[in-house]
View 1 (cartoon, one colour):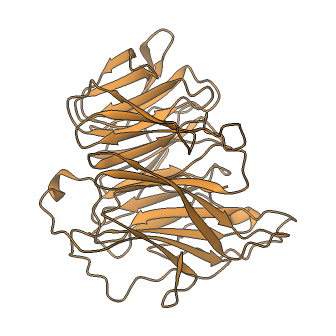
View 2 (cartoon, rainbow, N blue to C red; view 1 turned 60 degrees about the vertical axis):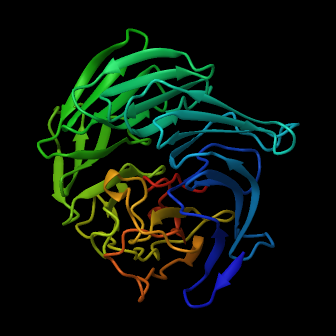
Length: 390
């Protein structure tokens, strides 16, 4: 891993090709480090990030690649399985991908001799989101531009199939009552399904369209957040099927929404890469201001406890990387690729690269900003491009 002296505490891992998606493992893996996976045009790389903690010898960020998996086609999405364990014998690495060929691939590896994958076929258009069952990990939910939500067994059988009225943009399992599934559609409708009865039990409606991303609040499952048009939108499902609060956030349309994993008042949004300098924003429902662009809010509130400090992990395509997009098929290719890890302590701020051209459509770079924050201001799981490091 190389340190980039031109940008504060920046680390770069060279990649062979475009980086389209990156995801932290949100589940406990049995190791002190944090598993991370990123996907390119025909590969997936699984690595380990070690972050500086009190009482450890780690300084800044340490990263090592564990294995590269041949994929054969562009990787559009990655979802980790809760069955991933590094402290078992042998270790288990399990994740699935969505790809440009509209198929799901389920990878299983022991990081040694066993490296297998299974193809799950059924979608007839681009897959916009996929997620494992959060407890047992024995099922995968996916949504697609083909107007369907599908539930898959790990053997590739479809155990449920829901017809939608528009493209499916996001899918989330209830973190506790795992027979409930939330599906967000591009037309602004969010439906909740009972997987045992295999029918919709509740719906929410956004007045703004297109709805591009939605997320279930992990700390208060009565709250749902989304971005549609230029706005972020919050619902309290105990009050109304219409939004409780709406606010404009990105001038050139919002793209992604994620709640904090530790607070029901903290969330983050991203805009469309390549559209504006202000791509990533952190919001607090109790405050009128948010952190805009590649800047992190000052985190000087209160004392931190002993041991591990909470962190924010943010991965976003740099502005000249559009990731998977139908409008992006003919983009110009560049020569080198980078996967960047950045660690900012406390109130340090991210800055936009001076040489970055917001009009460039293609890039082989992805930036991961990791902010070490105090407890009251800590964010985890705050961007759609990856899950937070713990």
